[in-house]
Length: 334
Ligand SMILES: Nc1ncnc2c1ncn2[C@@H]1O[C@H](COP(=O)(O)OP(=O)(O)OP(=O)(O)O)[C@@H](O)[C@H]1O
Image (cartoon, rainbow, N blue to C red; front, side, top):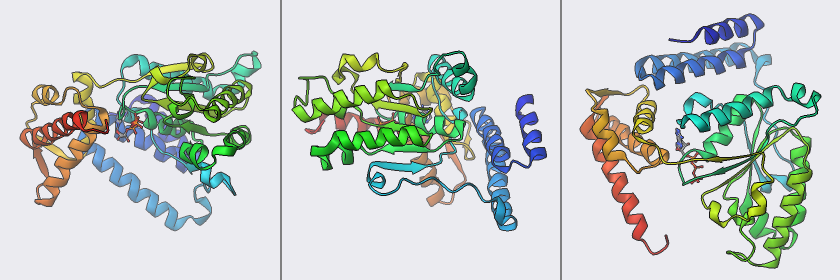
């Protein structure tokens, strides 16, 4: 069931005529129900929300959502902009990480109050951990929770394409950080954050890293800057203390595996699931791999005109993922 706070928020946004907030809270309720394993209810709620949105946009042209701020000129090659709807309830994390994210969101929501006391809210965050554990999703969740745009910084364009002028491009990104409030996400950050002499001991990369460190330090904007890496050991030690927070992500434990499976199944019924044995089979897989296994099982059922899954269906896909994972370890490129 929706919490008392969610019911109050729903009612308030209805009274205020704030459609965006109304649907955001309704999505939270749906996500919460899915997390509790009430897949059918979650699916019904989501269908109602989608239908409601279509109806609203048809009858109320002036209430269209605010257009997305799109980067202009050269910035289009450096930043990918979006307005994610992701919510904290959609991401499965250990309690410490969840509390970390809650604190960032809370401090951001009370930005002005904190600044009025001469303090600075957390907003320069480093995320470290294996692939597929939710680092990118976290950037979306923070943007979604704060209702601000997400700008993904395209490091490939920043470093490879504009090698000779990378620092100048980085300056432009930081100008945007200062002028347009958003969550700015530097994925695969090790590409510029690599330890001096570790991988890319090229003068250019080193200069870029130094520029980045200076710009990060000087930045006093109200944007959130998130850097993510799968290879924290490759990062220059000097980087760590430039961030307000370093958050570690890890592979899900058995309880979290079950949580991910239930959440990703949302809306699709599984007959008499044996969660403990599913979790055993799935151990070692990332959140992203679990997600793909569930999606594969659902697709297979849909193709064969079935509207339910069995534990055996899911086990098959989880085993496939394990095999793929093992094979990857032994491929020459890894
Ligand atoms: N902690 C999580 N909880 C729920 N779903 C998750 C989680 N982590 C990953 N997923 C699912 O896997 C997808 C891919 O994950 P994501 O891109 O966030 O991983 P990542 O850590 O950024 O990986 P990479 O380091 O490879 O970029 C997400 O869109 C989501 O569907």
